[in-house]
Image (tube, rainbow, N blue to C red; front, top):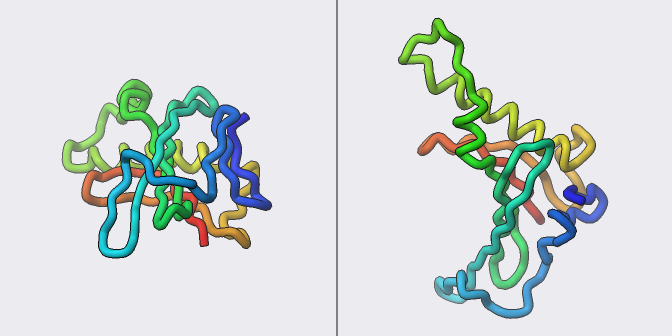
Length: 139
């Protein structure tokens, strides 16, 4: 069972759940000033699309979860148009990635609604990579 409960915001991945509150600091934690930051990652598959989900914690409280599709899957399944100009190669690739990520989020939520009482869900494009990822952001 892999889904996001639209009433509570809990993210279930293969029977595991990202805890909303962690008890102790993990080995991946870092302290900056008075704040502590840590994360945890899980791998999953939805509709034959492999992805990685990373939960980010601030002061032991879950702040967000980002979902990224595995790059090997993208490389194997992206087939660019034959008449594409090399200067325009990136835009169709990012569009393909964004559409896959949007489909992944729709499958997780089972609704097109994106804002909830517990937070919001969005698909983001980081222009530095570029990297496309789904983000579940908690209040």
